Structure formats: C-alpha cells, structure tokens
Amino acid sequence: MNGKLPPSDQPIKGIALAILATLLFAFLNSMTKHVSQVYPMVMILWFRYLFFGGYGLAIGLKTHRKRAFSSLVPILQITRALLLLAEIGVYVFAFRHLPLAEISAISGAGPIVTMAMSTLILREVISPRQWLIVAFGFIGIFIIVKPGFSSFNPWMLIPLFGTLLWGLYQVLTRLVSQYDGADRTTLYTGTVGFVILCSVLPLYWLPIDINWLGKFSVLAILGVAGHSTLIKALTIAPASLLQPFSYVNMVWAVLFGWLFFDTIPEITTFIGSGIIIFSGVYVFKLKQKGTL
Image (tube, rainbow, N blue to C red; front, side, top):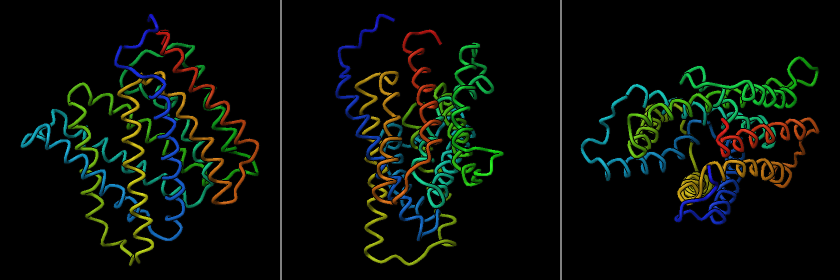
C-alpha cells in the first residue's frame, strides 16, 4: 500500500461522521436500556425494525423492482437476517440487566471474534501473530467477565453470546457479498426480521401512551440515523481508517452510564476494555499495512 487515499475520499469528515455515529448509537443504547425496563424486548425490536424494514424494502424495490427478492443464496440471506435479529434481541435483553459500559466493552471484541470465525467458516488463513491478537483480546473479555471468580456475574454471558452472534453475522455477510449486492442484502436484513417480529408482536404488545410512543419513535429514529451516518462515513473514508474510532463508543457508554443511570464501571472493566481496544486497533493497523 502506498497510503494514498482516492481523490473522492474525505478522511477528516469521515472520521467526524464515524465519531458522530458512535454518539448516536450510544444514545440509542441508553434509550433502549430505559425503555427495556418497562416494555418487552419484542416491542422494542418491532419499532426498530419498522424503520429498518421499510428502508430495506424501499432500497431493494428501487434497485431491483420485481426481482428484489431473487437472491442467489436465499437460505444464507435469511440465516444472516435471523442472526442479526437474534443478536440485537440479545443486546436489548442485556441492557435490562447490565450497565452500558460493560456491554460496550464486551461488544468491542466483535472484530476479533469475526477474525477468529473467518478461519473456521471462510477458511481464511490466520497467522500465528493473528492468533496471538485473538488470544490477547479474549484475555480482555475474561478480565471483564471474571468467570470462576466470586464476583462473576452470569448476566455478563449474555452480551458475550451477542458478540459471538455478531461475529457469525459478519462472516455470513462477507460470504453472501460474493453472490448478492448490498441493496438486496439490506432488503433481506430488514424485511425478514420485520416479518418475524410482526408474527409474534400480538403476544407481547402492551398499551402505550403518547409519552412512551414518543420514546419509541426516538429510539427508532436514532437507529436509522446512526446506521445512515456510519454508512455515509464509510462512503467517504476507508473502513480501515475509521474502524479504530468505533471504540469511542466505550467512552460514551461510560459517560452515559454515569449521567443517566448513575453507574461507574469497575476497574477490571477499564483494564479489559484497554486490552480489547489495543487488540482491535492492532488488527486494523496490520490490515492497513497489508500484513494480514
């Protein structure tokens, strides 16, 4: 690599948008945690997918019209869409029981988990250096979760499971990208989840007054705004440049957890987060240099 950016790239603006996206996602997580104390997970997911499913359907129909659902790998598309639905559901459930900072720290290991799963599913070659990075990142997770210790909180396993689902989802997304375009993949991602949620929503629906309806609307808008901002950032700056800034989300999580929920992370969370951030940034630095 010569380190030069394409003429259309705007790295400074891209970084600013990526950091803004982390802020929007932090607000989204905070609102999700607040709403999850009162309303069931299915209702929260349905409101999020109401916007997401509509967006995916609009994009797919605009690009492919009647052939919007004509995927070369429909089973894989449906599987990855269900994985994302499950992953989001797991995190929504975790927000009800755990502080924001702990969840954010564990989810920060997503890129490391994805790299490890790539060798198992995509048969990508992983060097000894890469396996050391994976092992080091998982040490950070163990420091946060503390399995086998008296202070072990079993609820910590929930976001850890969500991170594993996210890693598998990322690998399958990379796999389907070899067959279908981004528009069709977005279509399946949004509509499959929305159809599933509509089928079970009557079992979990609770009355909503105007105040809570407003909160649900804000939650849904934050989700769309966060994803749209991140997509915009990725269109004007390389992913390898922006990825390390995703860890700013951990800073917001600590700040918002203190401001809105009066929680301060344990020292082990800071230590584990530092290890995870170092491992994640190191992975992307190696990719940027072309040594992975």
